[in-house]
Length: 298
Length: 298
Image (tube, rainbow over the protein chains, first blue to last red):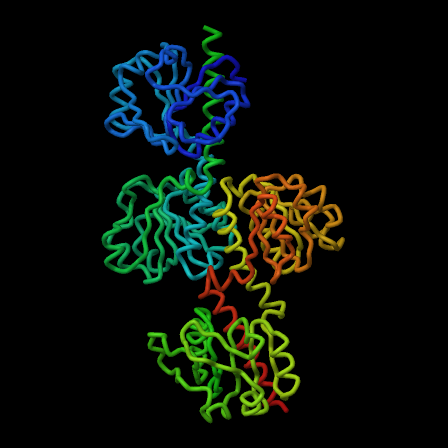
């Protein structure tokens, strides 16, 4: 339980709604800023403004999944008011206060180097990445069905990368009856793909593999689906790039060749905001409970 | 091969494009009516009007998947011209001419009772229903993802019916990590569901089961998801009804209770017209080849 912990939630999107619900269940005391347009009666959640003295009581602060922009601005889909996270504000929180964000950026990194507070970028944790791979896979399936006129079943699907997302994608498409080929670099990934009943190939042979591909799903965040790869693909191939921006695909060339290619990072928040919010709330509460236990022991 | 067979295709949708392609591969002589707006160079396909004498040469006639309307009108998405299938026209075809439709209706049934020709409603064949369950499943997955804010993974999914479509739906959702419960009537279906690792229940206990349901997928074409069932469901339950029109759900009551319920028959033609067309083309050509063999033997 999180009884007695003061947790602030600054802006965000539909995922925050589920976080509020979950953290409430665990009895945290919740303070919301940037939710003024939300007509939703949260019992037990208190609305505050960022300039209130309340900040001095916070044990944890939850930023939106994208964190801030490069000038410190915090976005909220539930408010038009301007919210800025600056050094001053962070310094006013108690020393043990923990900050959560989905991803971090130069602005946040340099701010938290100056102020002695902990910033936890949740998306770089292995557990969050694996939990998030579930809604990512479902979003991937949805986008593939929407963008092809043939079934996933019996299609030749190439998944590049057998990491936290690639493994989930490969398994799900295999389960739907696709012929799944997995492009890997490591021999251990080659072995794992074989064990899973999939057809692995080494990424150095991607050019040859590309000729026999109906759907290509990339999870590797380096330029890998290059023009010379795309050039080998059948005209009906659909490319979905799940790697973080700017993806690993030469989108300019794909368009030129008339091959449909879409960059789709951040699917969990789009296709299953409730589940995505629950994933983050679970991990946040786990971290806070461990944190509290650690403090009580010292 | 279908060399020398004269096959007419009257109207239809994107599925017909794939049929033309496939039947062409098998060397049938193709005659198209109702494709005047299609800018697509089919080599080897001849365009004709329904009043031409050509009708006297046809070995097979393929109607659109919905057949005709109740006045004999044939729809085509590639044409504005009026096409009517009447007794006169059917009687002008050679005696051995076989007619294909997806589904039949009172108009077609009574017409073919009067004229001595064979009408084959493809969708009532077991093989077509099972092949078609593949794109149906994918459309189902797509619609469920689009209409819920939680993941299929870990959701409690109730599938009503373990027939040709129900079995494919149950297996696919199980593969995606859902907790799949299958409502059945027969003890053999109960046994099969257990063997598949699913949780079966008897449909007479549907009311109790409904209270623990996030997603309900109905495949049974009788009024089964009644108001008293819907009344027991959690408010977030999503109902997708795959049974043929008018489905098995009390949509009026679902709307009144604020439960999202959608009737979605005919998904294959929507989500994967190419695959759906290929399925029909394969079965049609198989039937025509058997038919021809039978004629040669007599």
